[in-house]
Amino acid sequence: MDFNKKTILITGASSGIGRAIAGKLAEYDCKLILTARRIELLHEIKNHHGNKAEIDIYQCDVSKKEEVQNTYDKIKQAGGSIDIAILNSGVGIAVTTDDFKSEYAEKTFGANFFGVVYWIEAMMNDFIKKKDGIIAATSSLADNRAYGLSFYNPSKAALTIFLEGLRLDMKKYNIRILNIRPGFVKTPMTDQNNFKMPFLISPEKAADYIIEGIKKEKKIIQFPWQMVLLTRIIGLLPLTVYEFLAGKEKKK
Image 1 (cartoon, one colour):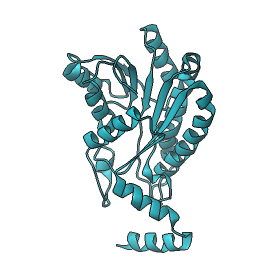
Image 2: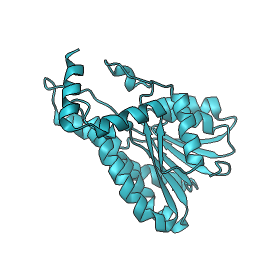
Image 3: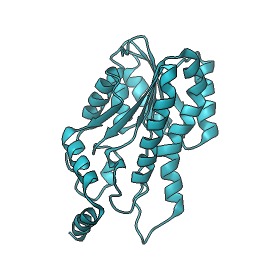
Image 4: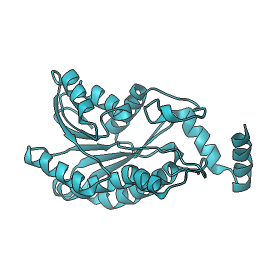
C-alpha cells in the first residue's frame, strides 16, 4: 500500500497514537481527514502540518451515531472519498467495586466498539462500490483476558472478534480489514493508570509500527513484540493458574 495520493481518515486524531500517526502521514503526498471531540487540538495539528499536507478537520464524538453519519456526510460533500480509514478513537475508565456504574460501560463500549461500528456503517456502501480500500481499527493486546475489573478489555475483545468476522465478509469486495493491537503506549489515557506498564512505548513508536503494518496490509498489527509474547503466554494459562497469579499481583 502506497500512502501517496490517498485520502486517509483518522479518528481520535487529537492526541496520543492518532496524533502521532497524523504527524507522520503528513510527510506523505496524501490528504488527511482528522476527527476528534476536541476540535481545538485538531486546529493545532493543522496549523503545524498544514504547510506540508492537505488536512481537513471535523469535530466528532464517535460514540454518537448521528454525529458520525453527519460528519461523514460533510466529508463527502467536501469531495472526500476515503481510501484508508484508521479508526483509532478510544477511552479507558477506571472501574472499582466501590464505584461501579453501568454508564462507564456505555461510555467505554460507545467509543471503543460502537465508535468503530458507526463509522463502518457510514462508509461501507462507498467502500463496497469502489471495491478497494483499507479499514484499520485499534483494538488492544488486552483483548485476550480480563486484567481485573474493567470495561476496557471486554470492549476491545468485542472489537477484535467483530473485525475478524468483518474481514471474512469484506474480502470479496477487496476491502482489507486490519486489526491494530498495541501494548502499553504512553498517552493521556494510560497516564491515568496507577499500575506498572511493562514495555511502555511512545506514541511515535506506535505510529511507526502502525504505518509500516498498513503499508504491508498486515491483518493483525501487534506490538511491541515483548508484550505480544507476554500476553500470548498469559492467554494460554489455565484459568486456575491465571487467577492465582493475578490474585497475587493484586495483593502487592
